[in-house]
Image (cartoon, rainbow, N blue to C red; front, side):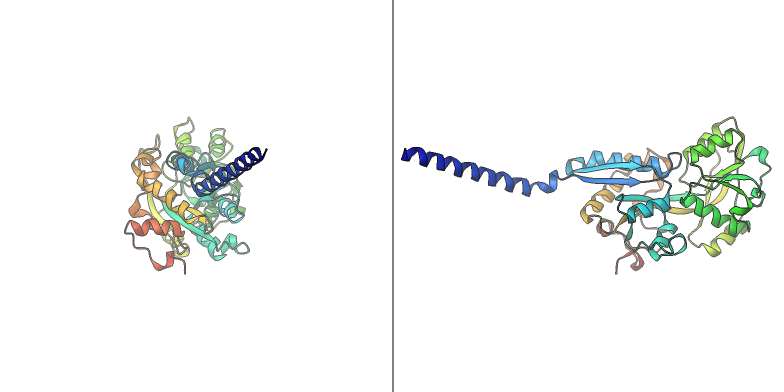
Length: 339
């Protein structure tokens, strides 16, 4: 009887010991097994943000899945909504125009009562180019001709909506009250133009923009408005973050000449609270797989390491991005570093 009690006692000790070892093993390996969910908020499906967000999330799942990263992409209303979603912790990453990120960081403009000091740049991306596409039979040859016309200004709360208003005010001395504004996604606007329901649309995005490709390839004859040097100077005087860009002839079907226009750098953004090591891995995999992803979308040809911080206004870079860029020998100006 005594031997039986001792045997049972030894079995209990063995079970407890194995349980403790298992718990220790689980704890020590938690970092490799723990899921890290990364939602990237983008823009309308007809723009550039959504397909590029899809490319990024696919890349991260492929390259970092064994480290627990589970990335997904979500369409949205664009830059303003993305900034608000990050602030409300409804997403981990977003794509947003550099100027609107600056406004959110400083609490200016549309963010006057909604300051987001915790926003951080992860990297610059491509220039978001202003593409004012109008029907050839609309009698619109300049921004001033938009007066009284039904024109798509971008989704409500989007960076495109903000930019369209800014451009109209400072280049054409007009407001949305002078036109019939619509707030559609890019593909919806393209369809509306083809149905004769819109005179035109502003489709800001990296080149080429899917919905612009669609409308130029359709039976509806369209053209793109140009920005003269004088137009650019008017805009640049009040918004120095704008640059001059060219939509090259042949980029879209039936676009037979270069179009001089304007644009702003788009950026990948995150909250400062997002894990530093995670951000380091995310940005590292973008640049170390450049050859793979750049062939997936023409806009990604601009996403080169030497361009990673160019054109960024004074909003701090995320510490994880700083770590990677410094490893690569990129000199980061003081205004892009946390104090």
